[in-house]
Length: 251
Image 1 (cartoon, rainbow, N blue to C red):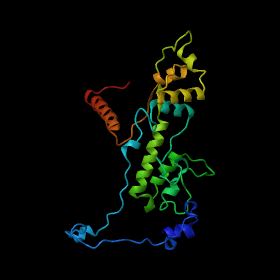
Image 2 (image 1 turned 135 degrees about the vertical axis):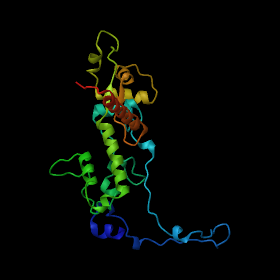
Image 3 (image 1 turned 90 degrees about the vertical axis):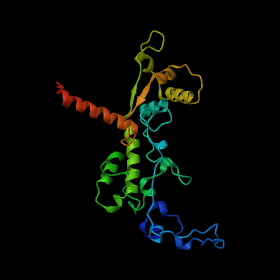
Image 4 (image 1 turned 90 degrees about the horizontal axis):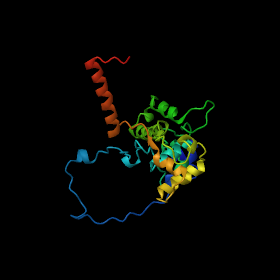
């Protein structure tokens, strides 16, 4: 398949790669078999069966309820004010920039020609979230694979952590005769960004922007498989149960 991707498909991510048959053959140095490097076969039928690959994402990369995909609530506030959506893929390894990493380059089985990814320009504009939802509804077998669905779910969670983000703040004044709204109405993006960097680096900053960021509280919708989502669903279940048991009228 690698040879086909390089020679035939025209996939842009494989343009300059060397076909496998032209790669130099490695020289393998093998020790003689002995008791320290040889195991006796216990169940040949099971040991010789290939179970396939396993794909996992660590929970450290999952969006959190109060910071989204950012490292602090201040960065989450800044990203929502600047409307800077998060990276959909966590990192691109040591071979490519994460900001330039495209889904069709990561998953060539689903996109063998390097076309059709969520960031591709189309005559009718389609959001990344809608494109990912469309992939999960396709009947093609390559789009039903567990490794592909896991990547798509991870990307969807990062998108929704941003689109469902909220910023709340106490309405007390920040000093002087101005109200809270008047104090922050004149803040610029640069002032807020500078204050967020100072707070992250533990640099003393008593500016209006820094006071605003310290008072601001951020939140976003919890991911479906996390403990936070389980707590939210339990509250909904208990509320529904209470309504049915005691016949509570919403009106």
